[in-house]
Image 1: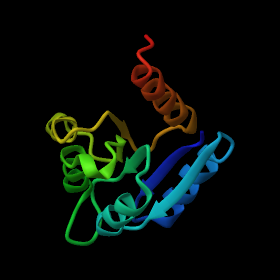
Image 2: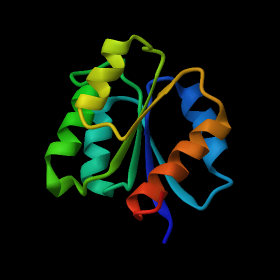
Image 3: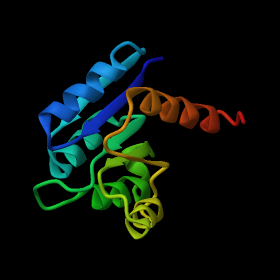
Length: 128
């Protein structure tokens, strides 16, 4: 079964980079340009994984979206990787406290992104 991934990022060039990084894997990739749009797509698609920016236009930011999907079982309990330029320890702590499964800093390497996703798969399967 292909893993369904939703990229929630307001910058089209970063969404494209993430898509190009992941398209060689067997993922079903969807995109949203804001957390508000992302929430609607989570409700429709029930993705396995969200790749979330923090700072986005709209009513919600990435932290809000992370908290919503992690606290509402009807949304399918996707794993969440935050991808952001916000590197302060307090911001990382806020992201992890919101329920993020991983936190990657921009600019990120495509290899690191793949390793992070693979690591989440291994931990979900109970593997070391």
